[in-house]
Length: 465
Image (cartoon, rainbow, N blue to C red; front, side, top):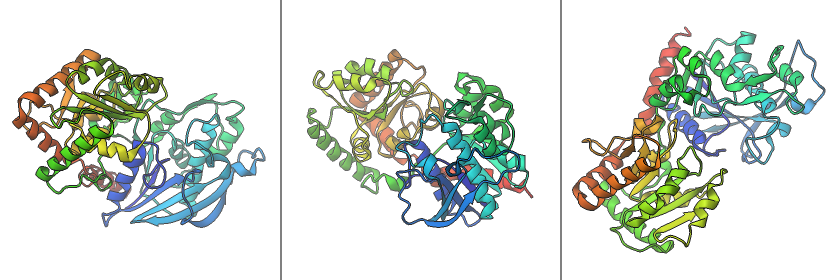
């Protein structure tokens, strides 16, 4: 079975967050199955190292209805190819649209992503990829299913995964996003003055997935659907929980008992590095994330004094909502506290290993990867009971518990959960060790998670026959 996965991010090539991890995890693990041939299609962004990719040909859009506006650089490019493991990786190369400083956030993003969708279609047709399933992600390839079905020359199923329903790619036609060029790319006339790429993608998809079961239900019946609730219901969106590429995170041990010694060593080392009191018995909390409202940054700020009263807190992250300054301003003003306003994956891994508890009180969380990584390092997550957090964390008072939950999103609820965790930490060491061991042994690997995708792909692939 041929699976073509289209995305803007892929770990080891280009990524800004969890999307790249998820696409790599799915494609890499799936490619190990003999019955699947997997290809991944990406834009050749400026920061992509393409020197080992082979140029397998140029392309230019043919169009029978609408005349190009004359911008030759906007109607073609090159196809690049490289084999990575068992995966065929293709890059869509276009100097004008993709060789920019950032991946996202430009005035002409509607045209960038429409060009990308049309280019994927051209690649699939010109290189005879012949997919049984085309799997797109979020809104960036949102027009691919429309283009494919409009042309009617692909016998395949279209799947879209929603990694975050908040981001929809809603644009209006204007000087930056030319309607005539948009129509040229899709090879059709458009009678609207604005385009919601995610809505187009979901409407034209044969199947809709999300990255956790609870999130799939949330976007159908709550404001988390961001106006597309009815469409998600109509499409019967389902969710498969993401996994973790365990080879990326070295926990430096082969068993739980030896890992406890590693963990203590890292804790003492980190306390010394950041001028915290060096004491293995003080509970060390970690908060590693994009500092934002969604990640609960404002309620963590309100809870800091409760945390550091008899514990320590290390914050690592950056954001664009003014939280950077608020967390940084507390440096030097509070004992048992340090904030590093930066993105540092190596330091993040050291903090996961060293810490006792991980804060993730998100307002919403489609899946989340940080709580899975923290579990892998026996660092107990304290999370809101939503989305992938609800699906991946088992409350502390159950036999197979591996973390703590807030039932509501708020400061009081977070403080209550922190105090509950502290109570167990200080007064019931046997239970605490059991919680740590449960977390350490929780199987969040892609080898486990991919089973859902294998079953799903086989089921819908059979319907093509």
